[in-house]
Figure 1 (cartoon, rainbow, N blue to C red):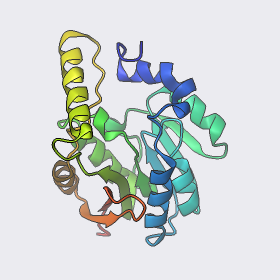
Figure 2: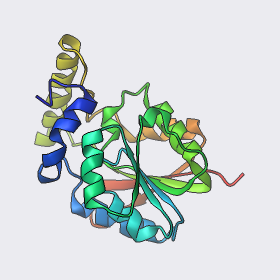
Figure 3: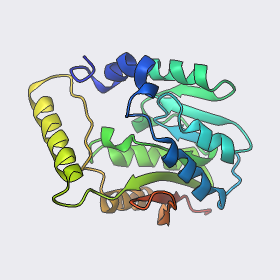
Amino acid sequence: MQALSSVERGYDLLAPKFDHTPFRTPESILVGTAEALAGFGPFGSGLDVCCGTGAGMQVLRALCTERITGVDFSAGMLEQARAAHPGASWARADVRALPFAAEFDLAVTFGALGHFLPEERPAVFEGVYRALRPGGLFAFPIGEPPAFPSVGYWATLGFDAAMWVRNAVWRPPFVMYYRITTSRALHDDLTTAGFTVEVANLSALPRARLLLARKPLA
């Protein structure tokens, strides 16, 4: 049912079970991200973009001294997040049109960028740029693509191919692709949005990196 729904409706359906599925961001990535970002903080307020059920809130809670906010367009996922993380604030919005301006010092996102086609990513990054205060940081982990001809390579290729076929013959579309968020494409889109970009290691995850996009002070 989820696969034949829109992205929003699909996540509404999955929300009560989401944290018990492999789709939840693994604890190792959350802990590794928080450890890597600790040297750049502390931060004031934090924003989790496409927060889902709020897994990224543990990263923001460890690093931010002021309010932490999650934004997502799935009412079902936000309902789960509110129950799991009392004290945080929440906003239901399409992240391609974020309703914030210069309110946050740190923004993070986990596992969400595959839900945006390449032509949609610039609007997401421009919104995050607006949401950050000058000098603010946007950080998210990225994995190296599986090497050819590994099982992971064929699995992600097959998944994306199936999704392209599904979206060509069925409406509404369910956008989720693994192979459209390459490091180079993300770097270019972030730079175009105005960020300066660098990459940090995640010590516990040798095949992953932390992409750091900084909004200039001026």
